[in-house]
Length: 112
Ligand code: DGP
Image (tube, rainbow, N blue to C red; front, side, top):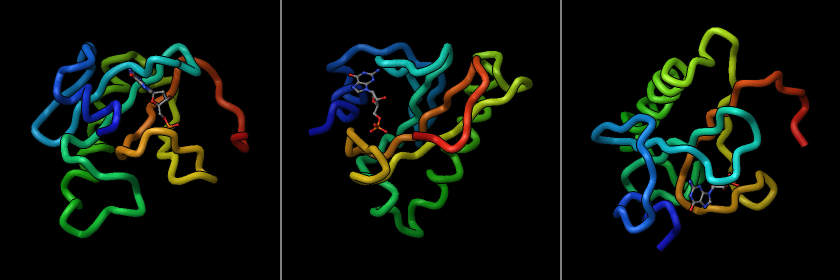
């Protein structure tokens, strides 16, 4: 079981930033910016390489939730970055699909 599955079960306490029937959002334990929220599907899916057409509603909800999170955290107007790290080269460390919403400072490009 991944750490995010344990968060969804309530074994590891988190404060919800946003939640609905398909996704759950909470602050990253190791923030890389003043705002760093993770949005995860309630369904256990390893990552982008495992998504299927049946996940379409959840995938859309992740982005709608990102907008809601950005507005709630006050970074919508200034701008923010959404990231899905995938696999080893993508830097994925927790193998439960998640969208990072990062903001509150100016971002550089390209990412490291
Ligand atoms: P990634 O490297 O894309 O797989 O991102 C995983 C993120 O998960 C990383 O930024 C740190 C975060 N994280 C790992 N364990 C925990 C935890 O127990 N609680 C919270 N809130 N975040 C966690």
